[in-house]
Amino acid sequence: MRVESVRFCRYAVPLARPVSDAKVATGRQRPLARIDVLTCEIVTTDGLAGLGFSYTTRAGTPAQFAHAGEVGELLLGEDPADIGRIYDRLLWAGASVGRSGVATQALAAIDVALWDLKAKRAGLPLAKLLGAYRDSVRVYNTSGGYLQAPIEEVEEKATESLKNGIGGIKIKVGQPSMGEDLRRLTAVREHLGDGVPLMVDANQQWDRASALRFGRAVEDLGLVWIEEPLDAYDAEGHAQLAAALDTPIATGEMLAGVPDLVRLVDLRAVDFLQPDVPRVGGITPYLKVAALADHAHLQVAPHFVMEIHVHLAAAYPRDSWVEHIEWLSPLFEERLEIADGRMAVPDRPGLGLTLSGRARDWRLDEVEFHVDGR
Image 1: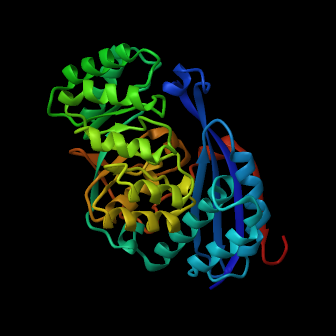
Image 2: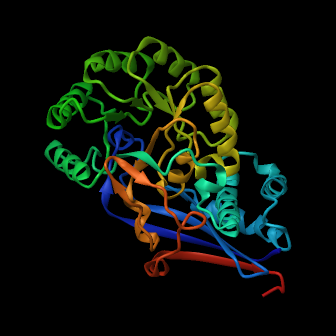
């Protein structure tokens, strides 16, 4: 069994309508209108296929696509079961541009495809191949809680999510007016009642003093966590905040290298670590981070791409949360099952995903490599 062909595609998947978080409210970014996706399809000499993907928001996927096209041909003829060796080979092939960021995010699509392929060959869902602890994971919704929506709409979306089986609700904060943040948050808590798990996400928009003030102001709301209260790379500040507040701290989604996530673990800067498989460079580096987080007795609540993370959360010793954002759902034929506050691990081999018929409408670029040179 060897790799016979590799195909990369770049897609622009539109959102139903643009959304805004605190980075938009503070003028740092424009509203998000689409998700750009890099896919990797690997086919072996015996006809088995693996599918992986990475993504970016607002910028970066053309660079990912270009890098994947530069190193992807090295996959040809390889034994796809040798995931670690392949990862190192591709990493060294692009070593001059570093071991994080765009380069490893391009490798993430390849790495996920190799793990998907390995699980399919074993006839197992990826979670089972990795060693599942459970067949479902807790799930919370984020997509209904963005700042462009009036609070009445946020409340309506939260009610709808709970009726659809979602177990928790996250809303965005971090606006220039902390008073407005507190008004919206208090209204949602009153709407949901004390029994519904509620999280907030500031998207890195506070300084240390502001984050501490907010954290103290909301201690009695019983939040599951305060997410990204500070700059993603301020590990020391997060450690100080985590030590000062009773409300748990969550962060890590924006970190694109294992060492930065390990620093959060070492400093005990988070209660919930939030690695993102495509951003950290794939499942292979993610598993290294998760092992260290478990050793430190931390919860892991992976960011976005629920289609991948449902498997990894099920294979983590501590029962944590997976984020429900449906933006990539149109790209795939299959749907994840949600009921009673939990997301079921698909029983299909691998990730259990196939690209939908609609995907071709959003395809911007493609390149393919084949052992016979086609």
